Amino acid sequence: MSRWEAVIVGGGPGGSTAAWRLAGAGRRVLVLEAREFPRVKLCAGWVTKRCLADLEIDPAAYPHTIQAIDTVLVGYGENLKEKLKETTWSEPASFGIVRKEFDQYLLKRAEAAGAEVRERVRVRAVEVGVNGVRLDIGGEWIDAEMVVGAGGYTCPVARALGGVSSEEVIVLTRESETEVGAGRLRRATPHFGRPELFAEPDFRGYGWYFTKGDFMNIGVGCVGKRPSVHERLDVLMKRLRRSGRLPEGVKLTPFKGHAYAVHRGAARLPAGERFVLVGDAAGLARDFSGEGIGPAVRSARIAAEEIIAWLEGRSELIAYAGRLSEIYGSSGGGVADRIADVLPESVLRSVARMICGNAWLRRRVVLEGAFGMG
Image (tube, rainbow, N blue to C red):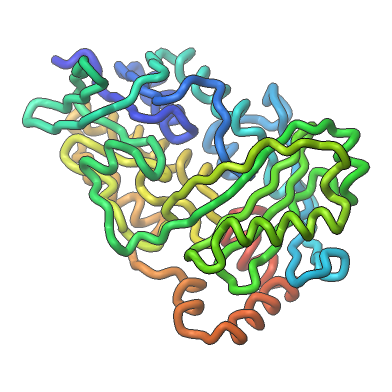
């Protein structure tokens, strides 16, 4: 018998949630994380109420930065003051967090539940055999009954076992999160603690400006290379400077970029004989918004349930793929993507303005639909 019943590659929200659930059920779990925690993770940094419920976290009891969000502002065009449209809920629709704190909290919780965590360990190769899985971590091989790929878009388990489709839709982002101080941020923005989203004119992405506690998060995400993500970021930064949202004398943390795949069908095989993929490793980020924490956590909980059933001989791991399909669907092509592919740019601009300007569409289609708020 292998020492480990499950090895989880990746210690982010998906990996730590799977480890927490499996270890809590008495299973022998090892988490391999390439970086050392706490670490900076590029992310605008908000989580839905559903996600916190899946994590069994009470916002009032969470010990780190958490910003209740009951209002979101959506902008388009060149003039921020005239074009910001406000959507408000009667109670918090989502919560802002700092990923460095949030991910560390979840990983430590998994460890407290009984999972072993090894940081600064990179998986070099993954081999599946009749009797189990072997992972090369550079001069050492680890044996397990099965493996969970939770290492994001470039997860070695996904690359080795899940395959990558040429039809994957890749989102490119540039982002910076800077600790400024709540007082200075309150003076700089009229909407402290409320996310401001700026639709790209071509309907292929958006920028954001989000103040939460002492932190300011700025970024852009887009599909496609023209205009480039760098050019889009330059436009956003000019708009923010003109509006006075960047406090004088603040040196922003350098912008960094990353890529991920959004869910537009089964681009990757999410499960096989001795593996499952969760979160970004399975390409589950929400279409258009790119919100990935919620799908990572939810898929990890489902994966843990199916792994336990498999270890007990009650099910096959491929059942996990069926459950994902029930939740996220399996047909390719998001609505926004199909529209963008067939309509001329002038019409796309009109569609973007209509969605941003119409209160019902903005709430239902964009914020509650694409972002999972409410």
